[in-house]
Image (cartoon, rainbow, N blue to C red; front, side):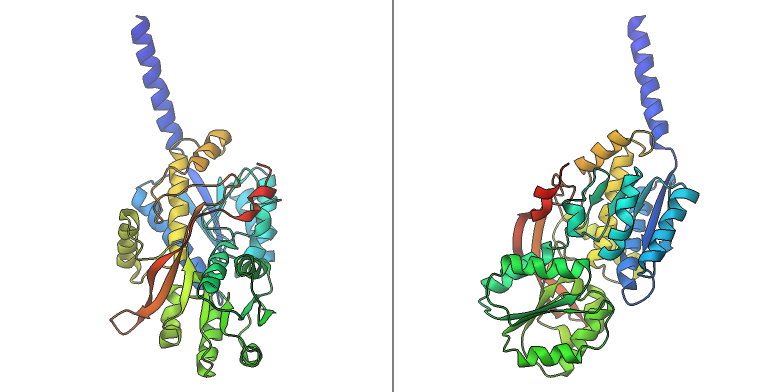
Length: 381
C-alpha cells in the first residue's frame, strides 16, 4: 500500500511539473528595428524566433518592440511591457547606452534580463545582478582579442577609433588592454556619424601602420566605403561588429582581406551551428550574422531554463537553470562565469570572396581560448 502511495505521489509530482512547464510565458523583446543599426536588431529577433519555432513550444509568447535606438523610448517600452503586458522575462537590447538606461531598473524590480548583445562593463562588474545574464560577450572581449592579434602580427603604431558611447569606450579600453605599444592616435566619433572625411585625413597624416575601428551598423559601412574611396592603403582591423555579414555585403570589395575577431563564425564546425546556419538561410534567404547566432542562443538558454521552472513561480530554480546553461550552443561548449557573462573562445576571421560574386567572413584561427572578462573581480555575486 505504501509503495502504491509513493508511486502515486511520484506520478502526481511529475504531472505538476509538466503542467508548470507548460504554463504560458511572456517574453518582452525591446530591440532596434529601424534606423542605421536596424539589421542588428532584426537578426537578433530572427535568430531568437527561429529557436522558439524549432522548439515547437506554443506556450511562449514574444512581444517585440522597436526602440529606434532611443534610450527614452526603450525606457517607456520597458514600463509598458512590465506594467501593462506583465511579461515574465526581458531581452533584445542592442546598444549599451540603452542597456544602461533600462537593465538596472528591471533587475531591481526582480525581472530577469537575458542580453543577446549589449555587454557594458558596469553590468559585468560593479552593477552585476543575479537576474542579469549576458549570452553574447562582455563589450571588451572582441577588441581585446584584436589588440593581441595586432600586437602579435608586429604592428607598432595603430590608429584606433570608436563612437563616443559606453560600448565605444569599452572597445578602445579592451584593445589597449592587450595592445601595449605606441598608438598613432585615439579618437572618439559621434554615435550615428555618417561623414568620416576628417577622421580619414587624421589617419593619413598620423604615421599609423594600421587602423583599428569599432563602428557597428551603418557607421561601419559609411566609414569603410569612404576609407576605400580615399585611396588610403593602411591595413584595417576590427571586431565582427564592424564586419558582420550584412556590412560585408554592403561593402563588397572594399572589405576584402580585412581581419576581424568574433566569438562565432558561420563556418564554425559543430553540429548545432551547421544546422542553425542552414535553417536560418532556408527561412530568411541570407547568411546569419553573429547577432542572429546570439539571438538563437539566447532563446535556447531561455527554453532550457523553462524546462526546469517558471521565472515568476520559482525564481531561484529558474536562475539556477540559467546558470547551468544546459543547451546546445552555436558556439559549441557554452558556460557562464560567476558574473553571468560567457567564458568562451574568440576567433579571427578574414573577409574573402565567396565564389558567387560576393564576399563573406571565413574562419582562420583562434585568437583567445576560454576568455573571461576582467570585470568579474568587481562583481559581488
